[in-house]
Amino acid sequence: MYEKLVENPDDIVGQLAYCMYKQSKQQYLQQFASRNKRQPSDAEVRNHVHCAELPAVDMYKDTANNLFNDYLAQAIQDKLDEMEEQYKAELWLFIKRHKPESKFEQFLHGSKALFFGGIGGVVGNALTTLIVILVLFGAASSVTRDDFAQSTKERIISGLAETFGVGILIRPAPKADLPVESASASTPVTSTR
Image (cartoon, rainbow, N blue to C red; front, side, top):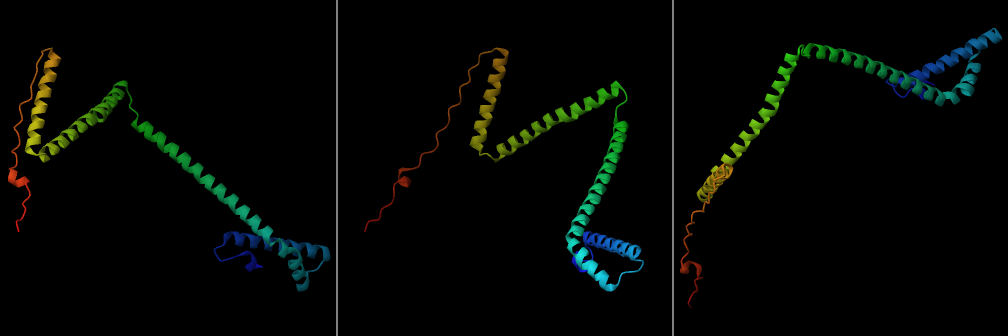
């Protein structure tokens, strides 16, 4: 019967089902002895096992599985409740330790958060933008840099003039033409044979 209920030595549900079988068998032995005033013979025990216990193997497995799952669920719930209580206690302790005690301290904590959070973010973004511009400016060709510098100067001056209400018209400087390639370089060479 053990082999029918227990699949391997680590099978807890099977072990529990086997205990249920043994309990049922013990009840049979006790009831038989009290009714008949004697112990059952080996043949009577085998007959009981064959007729009553073997058909109940699946019932023992199901009952053991349900019982094990109930105990496991209860153990998990107990552990979760314990962890929740511990977490709440630690959270309240943390809040009590770190809660500012006066309005001035609350204002001071809020000011620090604003300064280091908001203003620090703006300054960090501005520095990052400046570094990216400098890297791109350094990587650009000298003609592109000169055009960028001239355009930037014109825009800054125009913006300041507009802010102060002064009308200024800035004309872009004439660009020097690029040297034209000689006609011989653009004409293909043909061989004369």
